[in-house]
Image (cartoon, rainbow, N blue to C red):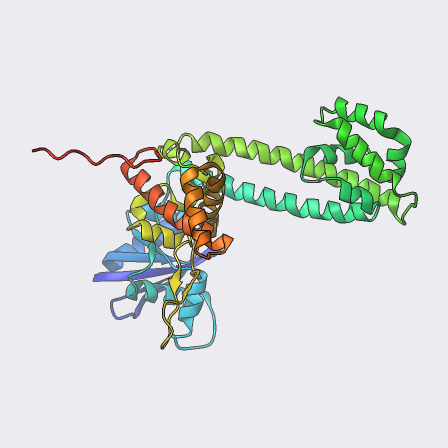
Length: 399
């Protein structure tokens, strides 16, 4: 039996490929294994018989690897993450130009053998896993809504450019209006009073101004454009789909908030200006809610993409750029919460104004504030205390 070995797994949907290397990087096991419990348990047992201490590495941590990660956690195995881009970059240093699952698994195993900077993978608790799924679901729904609203704008242009300009399709009222009235002719025929009465019956806020605006826009166009009848049907259908997406988003937001408030750090995160349940849930989904995974606030800032990375060469020094590798979702949390805090928190506004007076652009000033707030988040979670505008007084020293 070997003293130490390293296992690399190239993750697939139906099957994985695993390669185990010794201290010299020589393969001692290479096999394809099905993505089911019996086969994976057999693999883990086989690898355990090869060495006393095994370090595992995977190139994917999404649904395809969930079963393997859970089984490795149950068997108390150390697991690290090597991204697909890292595997591709490292592949250039290995012999051969071909690409196979076995070769990728061997590269992953050899990289985890040599490198000390890889991120450990932990199996999160049920609450974090649920938040992560809900946050991803909300992101998909929001993206679908943006795309559908853009298509609705385009379709409405083919009926009446004036009506398209007059209606704000990001709000519910105009969407409800379009489920019944899509053409200038229909709006003119109904008239302001009838449109207003119908909107009020649908419980639309500010029905009167919306009805006046829509009918006025309709009156500016007497020409019927080609394909208007079909375009009107499509506009009504898309408006209903956007409203349905809004209901799904609302339901998902409620699910996210309910689970977020059950987490032990929720009150701490909510105390920081600019962070609400949705951003707090995104923070937990990105970090797992455990700051022990980060060695320092600097480490957390780097992971969130708000700590600039140096790019010096030759005589050029002090050249700072955004890092290539960072968590986009976590950066969104830090940047958006900083942007919000400028409006509602005096200390944040003072810091932002100072950076602007120093010549920083808007984005640079917000990023600087976001980086500063990472230190605050780190300290609050470390000490398990709520945010206060003034830092707590240090404990008195006994005489």
